[in-house]
Amino acid sequence: MKAFILGFILTPVCIWGVNWPQWRGPVASGHAPTGNYPKTWSSKEKVLWKTDLTGRGHSSPVHDGKYIWVTTAIETPASLEEKEERLKENNGLPTVTVLSKVSLRALKIEPVSGKIIKDIEVFEKKQPQWVHKLNSYASPSPFLENGKLYIHFGAYGNVCIDSMSEKIIWKNDEKDLWVMHENGPGSSPVIWGNYMIFHLDGSDRQSIVALDKNNGRIAWQTKRSGEMRENPQFQKSYSTPIIGEFNGKFVLISCAADWLYGYDPENGKELWKTKYGILGFSNVSRPIIGNGMIYLSTCFMKAEIHAYQLEGLAKPELAWRMTKGAPKIPSPILIGDQLYVINDGGILSAVNAKTGELNWRERLDGEFSASPTYANGLLYLADRAGKTLVIRPGKALDIISENELDGEPHMASFAPIGNSFLIRTDSTLYRVGEK
Image (cartoon, rainbow, N blue to C red; front, side, top):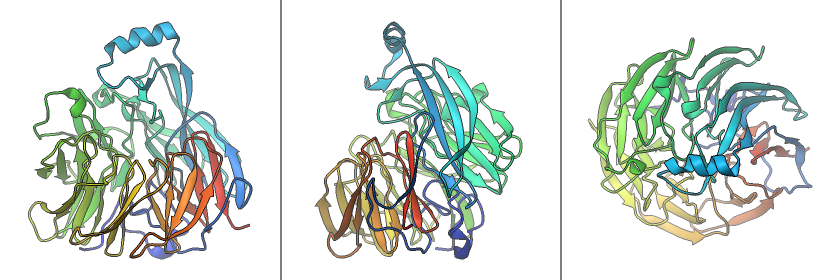
């Protein structure tokens, strides 16, 4: 497969050390740049700084080497009476958080000290949609490009902020971009050319959208064309797209309920679609690409890993599938010819990425939501309780260390910076590394 791009022409490796512009890095692979990252730490050791964040969120931090940005939400809970009244309309899961109002914000942080330089309120929404208790109102991760921060808060709106001046350049929360998420927003945006692209797959409407990144206006919006299940709860999705080059053309790879789509990122034209062949919805795990193939999890109900060959073909063809141990939330990671998959319940599988042959599978302690990171030739797996397992990839499970931070919910993925990691919990940001 030819070199692929994600939001921009592939950044040279030498620049990777000063940029982590989006969730899972410059090319959304989860691979950190070369560095001397820590293998061990604790709440008392190798913590360069710890910053209490305003509000709560699950989004991953991004940075350009100069400044760190994270999104967050200040929540005002609904009264018991208001909650009971509003949940009469809830046709989904009962395990949800209901608010009277929410303040959606962006935090600018100085990387050496961890000091919050600026706390910017972007939107305030009264009686916002409820979110699942494993989700937050600030779960989509922002995208930082050329001094501009692009933020997607799902149906609540989109914003572009100048990273230096901290001024809001544009906002867009128009009604054409409203959907019923049911469990809250989840899809992160990508930047490609002049566009900010994201999914809007609710239980009521499903589409993929591109805004003009210069002014925030809708450039194109393409409705999902695949036939879906009758139950609206089976029509929603929270996955994040990825852009790759296949057969000499750029393709926007997009996981939605029951279908994998390919679009032209320039105009949103559907190039192809292929059905999973099983019930697949509420997609959270992000697909990855490599070896001319697309790797994805079908997510709920019973998750499977599917590998589709696309290079050399007009549309994807299923190459292999893994029917046990697939994740609903964490994304897979590709290391050489091996695909490593951690599922929500802590089952780690190592699979031959080209053939689908299972090399080994082991159960780890803990529950997992964050997507794994590959750094120092090691695999970093962080569970929801704040424990990170450091594993040496190979022919068998080889745990190098177990490291714990304070045990508040840990849902975000790591962001490498210098020779350290930014680790975000619900309401805290750590920088962990050698002093």
